Structure formats: C-alpha cells, structure tokens
Image (cartoon, rainbow, N blue to C red; front, side, top):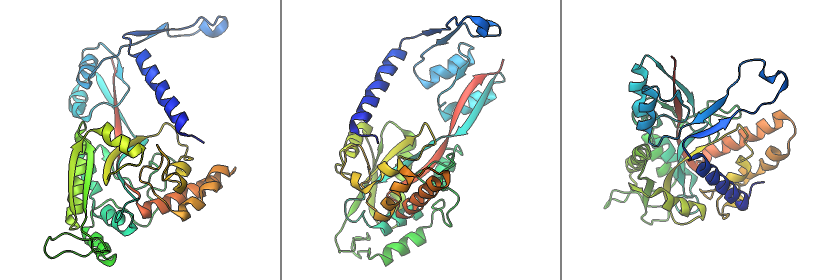
Amino acid sequence: MMNTNRRQVLAMSLALAFMFMAISPLFVTAQDLGGNWKSGPYVNKIVYNVIEGDDQQVLALQNDEIDLIGDMVDPQFLGALTEAEDIDVANVLRNGYGYIVINNRDYPFNITAFRRALAFAVDKEAISDNVWDGLSVPQDSPVPQVNPFSIEGQLPYTYYEANVELGNQMLDDAGFEIDEDTGFRTAPNGEAFDVLVECAQSSSIAIEVGQIFAEALQALHIDARSIPTDFYEYLQRLYFHGDFDMVFLGSSFTTFDVDWLAYEYWSEYADEPYWNFPMFQNATYDSWREQLLTATEYEDVYEAAIEMQRIWVHACPNIIAYENTLLSAYRND
C-alpha cells in the first residue's frame, strides 16, 4: 500500500531524474556485450536533445534537426505538422483524463443529487468538440476507457450530453428551491450558497472547462463562477483537504492496474493528506475494496473494479470531463 512517505520519495526521485536529463545533449552509449549480440544491426548511441518550448520542438522537427517528438504535441501545431509531407502524426487515447474535483465534505456539495444534477447538466460533447477540437472523447468513469477494467460504455446511462431539464428536476426533488428574490437556488435547509470553480490559469483548456462547468451550474439556477488561479496553490489545498468548492485537475496512469481504486476514494482516507481529494465516503464502495485487493482470480478482480466504478459514476464524487488524444510526431524520410 502506498503511503505519504512513498509519494514524497517518488516525487523527489522524479525531480532528480528530471534535473539529470536537463543536461543537453545527453549521450547514452551502447555497451559492448560481446558474443553474438553484435552480429546484427545495433545502435551505437542515442542522443537526447532537450528543447524547451513546444514551438521550438516543432520547428526542430520541421528543420530535420530531430527525428521525433515522442511526448504530447500541442494540438495547436497539428495543422502545420499534418501539412508537412515528410512528417507523420500519430495519436492514441490518453491513459488519463481531465476532471473536476468536488468537495464532498461540505454541505450542500455532499448531497449526491447535487453532484449528479451538475453531471447531467454539463455538456461533455461540447468540451470534446469545441474545447479540444475533436481531439478528446467524453468520459464518465474514473478508469480511462483505454483500460480493459473500465466500465465506460457499459452503464445504461451517460453524462455525455447536457440534460439541464433533468438536472433541474433532480434539484427540485432534492429540496433545492429557487429563491424568488435572487433567482438562485438555496440548499435544502434554506441557506443561500454559491459555487467557485477554480482552474489553472496556465492552461487554456482548464480555463475553458472551468467556464463550461460554471455555466452548467448557472443553468441549474445556482450562483456560480469560474476563476483561473494558481494551480499549485489550490493543489496544496487538495493535498491537505483545505477549503475549496470545485477545482480542475488532470490525471494520467502509467499502467492498467486499478488497485488505486481501493485507496484514492477510500472512506478512511477522507482525512488523509495526499489521498481522496474529494473526501468521498461511501460504505457500499468500500465494501468491494477487500475483494479488489486480495482476489487471486481475474474475474473476481474485474467484478470488484466494475462494481466500484458503478457506484462511483452514480455518486459523482468527481466529474470526469474528457479523455483526450495524445499526439506524437516523427519524420518519415
């Protein structure tokens, strides 16, 4: 089981590795293994040129100074790259997504009907079509759809298309009445409330997504606004379960393991620093945890993962906005 110390050690290790690789260029020379290993073609050396800035990387590729950009290529350069005859662009769905974290601890955000109403009101199709220019797909599950353990596409409903009418009906039924004087809904206890959606000021995608969520809340007659702010400032608040309403985040995974479902949203970690950002607590979700972690048969692990996702998607502790496409470019000459 991962703990806070392991996360901190991992972060320090990654930082050290990045500092080492920042030396430009970095040469990795092939070792002489002897025997028959050198009987066929082999690479004498690999040169890593660290080029800062997406525009400079694209320019270097166009000028035949480098052979490929293996990391994410900014979509704004897609047109120029696809028009080049000697450059090909490859794309794959990301093993990750962008999403909105909701504070499940504070009233009235801890009411499931409130979170589900927002999920139904958000137009995820518009996010993929307009914000990402078709380079993403809607996503509901916390497990990316590229993962064989994902429940995406198996549920009898989705939150893909905006259904503001249904969202408003859910809030009506849950007791969120509209104040005739303000035009905004009050909480079921009669108290006025508002919602602040925070998004990273350094990301145009985050800013646009945050605005779409704020507009969805407004369509539900909720006093809401979206404000771009410093990403690392609100990340610290998430780490230590500080004060927030909703914030934009992105997550990526390096494997198809799903054991993290047993930790990231475990009720006992609702107060644990660095874990369970939405502070989600659900006993039924927790009841599948042991099977997910201890089962030795694939079918049992799969069942637990699917059931935990089924509960999660219904409860909406977070709202996944999209699963985007990762672009890479390489020379074909």
